[in-house]
Amino acid sequence: MYNYSDLIVWQKAMNLVELVYKTTGQLPNEEKFGLTCQIRRSAVSIPSNIAEGAGRNSKKSFRHFLEISTGSVNELKTQLEIVKD
Image (cartoon, rainbow, N blue to C red):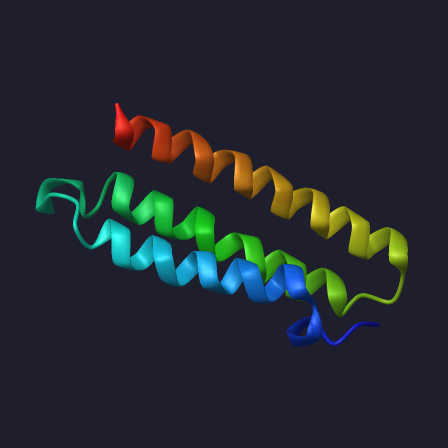
């Protein structure tokens, strides 16, 4: 339906993934399989769901995957708050 790589929201999400990987690389090693892994998975989920939704055959399906991406954004924000605290 859409070429996901042309979507600005997908491009920004990919930039966020890059930033998250750089930032989590600075976390202590004891968090490598805990928060680091979870934070990275949440970040990767954002552009992945945008891309999956863009490939669906209806705007309704696309909106659904955008909602899932929004949920991943909130998950990521919560995990980053935990790291900050």
